[in-house]
Image (cartoon, rainbow, N blue to C red):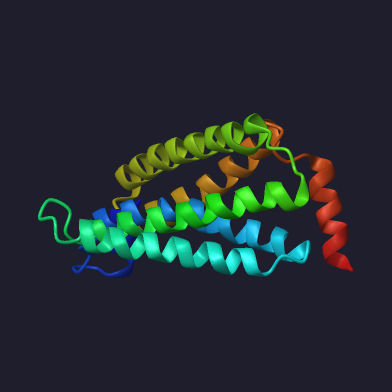
Amino acid sequence: LADPILHMLFPGMSQGAEVLRVLSISVIFIVAAQTLVSILHGVGNVSSPVKNNIIGAIFKLVFVCVLTPMPVLNIKGAAISSIIGYAVAALLNFKDAVRYTYISFDIDKMLLRPVLASFLMGFSVYLTYNWCAGLTRSNGIATIVSVIIGIIVYMLMIILTGCLSIADIRYYARYKKR
């Protein structure tokens, strides 16, 4: 939805959709890195996340210098560099979280099922946008409706695949009331 979102927010000036499309991948690593930082802080390790973020930033800087001057990439090189930098920080934070908390990594529940849910959400957003845009002839309405449908599909898929149980939701709701 990079194009439709930019058209909705900046009518007539929506260049950069390809960069936004590439950069959106970094959100996965930003969220993972931040979650792992919280875990590390929770066990009293505040220095590892700082070190890992600095290493990630160094990777990002090196790749910006290498990729951005390439004519085939240009500004997309900066977006790719961001992905690499955040991925490095997230992986280092994960390594430290495993070492300091002794958590086990269930690849099915922690990676494969969320990827499946994300894929099905993306597919539903794509179908919904195209259907709604054809029906309403309005980019704004089609974009908003498809985002709402995407949220609903993702939440349902997270529950149906067992990534999140109804008991987890109830526990979180009770916890937030405190």
